[in-house]
Amino acid sequence: MSQTITRKTAPMLQRSEDAKKAVVSKIASTVRRGVKPSQKKSVGAFVDAFYANVGPEDVLRVPPDFLAGCVSSVWGQLQKRASGKASVRVFNTSQARGGWDCPHSVIQIVNEDMPFLVDSVTEELNRQGHTVHSLIHPVITVRRDKNGRLLRLLAENSDDPDALAESVMHVEI
Image (cartoon, rainbow, N blue to C red; front, top):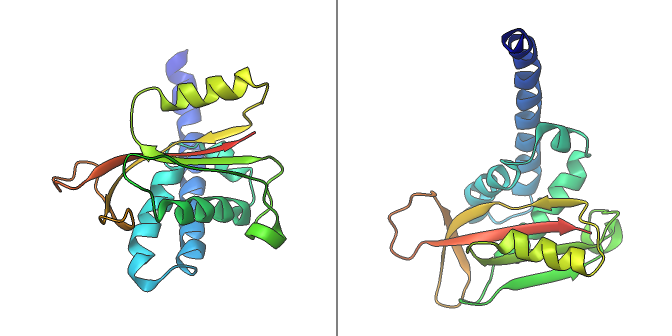
C-alpha cells in the first residue's frame, strides 16, 4: 500500500519542489537588483541557502515580494557582525519603513554557529509567552574582514582557514 501512495504522490511532491525552485529563483533575481554588482553572486547563493530547508508549501503560500523583503532584510543584517558577538534585531516592518509588510514582529539573529541556538531562542520566546509563527534557520559559511564586514559566502566544506560557520535566524512572533 505505501508503495502505491509513494508512486502517486511523488510527482505531486516534485511539482511542488519545482514550483518552489521557480519562486526562489524569482526572489533571487529581485534581491540581486538591490545589491552592488560585487554582491550579486553571493546574494543569489544566500537566497538559495535561506529558503533551502523551507517547505515548498510554506514558500508557495506567501507572496514573492514578502519573501524577497524578508531575505533582503536578513542579507542587510549579515553585512557586518563583530567577531564573538551576536547581531540581533527585533522590529516591526511595513512597506513605508522596510519595503515589506510582515503581520508579526520580527527577530533576526546572526551568530557564530553553535549547538542548541534554535532550541534556546524558541524556549526563551515560549517562556515569555510569545508564539513562534515562522522560523527560518540556515547555517552558512562566510569570510569576514578584520572589521566584521562580510567579504563573501563560501561553500559549506570550504578549506579557507578564515571560514566561519554562522547561524542565521529569522523568527516571526
